[in-house]
Image 1 (cartoon, helix red, strand yellow):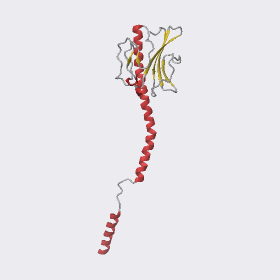
Image 2 (cartoon, rainbow, N blue to C red):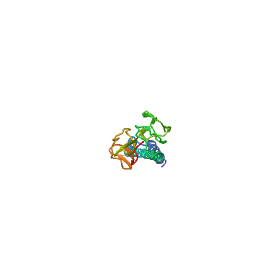
Image 3 (cartoon, rainbow, N blue to C red):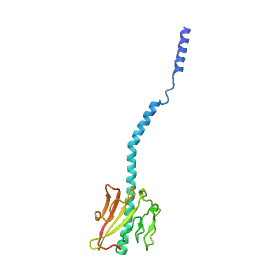
Image 4 (cartoon, one colour):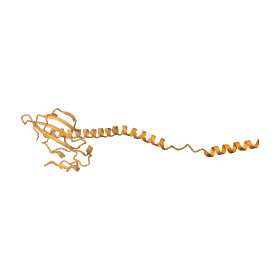
Length: 189
């Protein structure tokens, strides 16, 4: 009997020594995991980038609202909105108007002591444009603020009367955002 017992022990030892450890991943399992992660990332990444863009446009809305409040303050103090300025220029009498120093700014309007806000980050590195055009018999002033959007180019017409009603407009299919203060009964000055 001792021979059978010895053979069983030797057979069990030989069987255990031939087994390989199954604690790691095979190459195929690793490739499947990488493919799954890649598919999930390709689905999630565009949504994430869209949310980042949406947040930047929200930041532009907040900045445009602050510019609007400052323009209204200036109108209440002096009786009229400032005259039209080129893009990235601070209108006369305005204290808050973010400018982009990478596009040739900060540029101040003549006869103004307003500080240029170069420390304020403009979304997408874009810029703002203050527009004021005469309407009707030159006794009215249409006022708006234009944000050039992600592509940093103005795609909407400057003299268009499409945005004369007060409100916030997203000029589709372009990426410009227009904040119209409406048409004022006083001429621009």
